[in-house]
Length: 240
Image 1 (cartoon, one colour):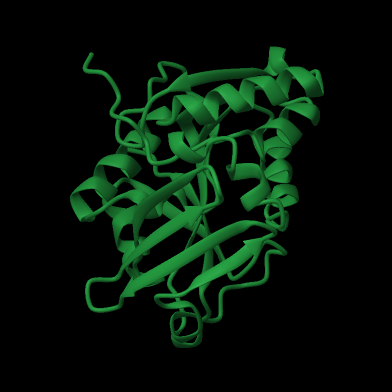
Image 2: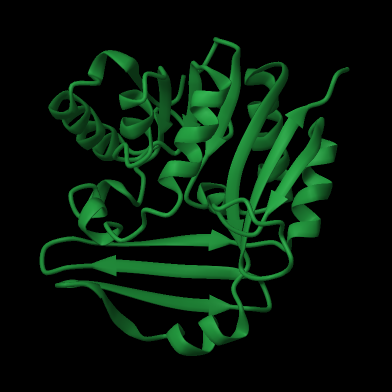
């Protein structure tokens, strides 16, 4: 197997948690989904364990996949500190070919990680890969966004202090629907690209990959999607 290329998250693995510390609204939602499924759960883009560790603390086994060894190292350290390392199986891999032979009732891809997919070919490959990991009737749960005009206007091309001493810059290409996101502090810096789609396009891609959309939420409180930037999908593996 070819080595996994360096991830843009490697450079900010130790910065990631301070940078994202205010993002907590999705944790309870994904933990609830995992507890309802019973586990084991495959979490794609597990990162530093922001969601996986609370999920393991709730008694659910997690197979965590990430393309950044640095992020996985931080996750392993934090899992040990939380006393849940025995419930986390961390593996280096990507969204297109997750290194998972097991079949599970739930696959999750939190915090917009599917936006790292650059085109419909990659999206189809990733969704099909998730489909393969699921037991019959299993569910894929993930969230994505499509930015509003106000968000673009307020943030485009500006360094913003997102957390004390941590700066974030968003460069939006609304024609190509690509966000170039840069993050830095006084010691670490990284830049990554994310590509967004409208929710209707995600629905088509899910159907093409063998899923039935069971729910589309507009936020993690499970309100029905009625427009807006954030979309949470719950999709069921369609019987062949």
